[in-house]
Length: 228
Image 1 (cartoon, rainbow, N blue to C red):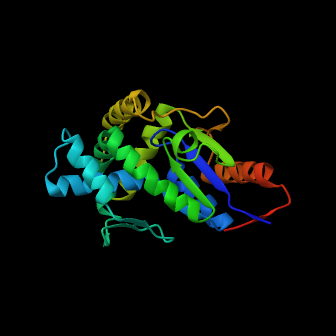
Image 2: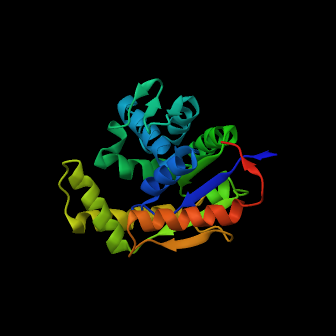
């Protein structure tokens, strides 16, 4: 028998979800799906098209019409264009948080995410994967870290890309994003009841990766072959 496996990783900004999900997907040979990149892509398209953040109908139409492709190499294609670098600009983080709070946008992208995840075993990360997108996922993780550690990581990530940012500014922006993500009426950020909580504050990337791989093995070691 073969069985597709879905690994759902949720958590706040800066917890290390993208890095962990990408590494674990590579180790398992699964598809990696970065749902945050999809919201960033819609926000990027809205900015280019001059669609206001207040125009909920316009933003929903863009989300419905967007042709999004996430390649195994980690590239993000929007309507055939590689926007991998453009969506990682600092302003896209806050823009994506605003766009993702719109129910119509979420509904449109959740359908796309479910279609992607249904095609093969995958590691999918975001804010509502274990609660909304794939509530029946075989493995659910809620990855967290202290606010200070998450802000420090974001500053370090920006610096590695040649972008200077002060800790205080990043900390405040992250605080606002946490508030927006956790209090939005539609699919707020929260830990699924059956998700395993991991605090990565004192751990390096290898330690977090190995911890998650142990959980995957424990949750899926049922004698069945995993279909990739």
